[in-house]
Length: 228
Image (cartoon, rainbow, N blue to C red; front, side):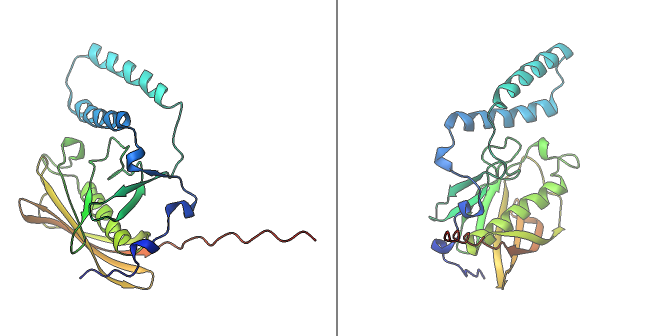
């Protein structure tokens, strides 16, 4: 059962925390295209067996491009506001390793609201490999952490992971659509009890139970004292 204790309209704007917020629509399509190309590049580099000359030329090219891109960098902690199909808004760091819009290393995991919680699908390649042909256990935990954390945010308020217990039921395969679901079990004060699971071919491969703890919204700065 999902417990919603805080209406969407009452959730604090992330600007309250002193962090810049970028709306998804504000991310340039050229940047999205670059992120996708670099995502493919990571996979290509991880699996290539080309000759040394080709590797050296590629390394020099990437080094030059990296220098050009690094002349203007975002502030650490920059957030992105994502508009869900349900009409809700989800916030996350724009470089999040699991779901970051501008992080080429992210799968990325895109979650949408359902009647019970959140649901998403993702297919992982060998960049996320642990045992041969299987997803690394650390990435399984990361996907579940992201999913249950997002469920807590959507259903209640922003929080941080206080505890996450992951049970691995069977190997999770690469190159297979993975269904990831998450939901809120109950809320006790600042603690949000959450659960999630991963399915492949309709079978549960991993489950998670955790506790998220609400982050206190900073109080408004007191007014400056009147001059004497």
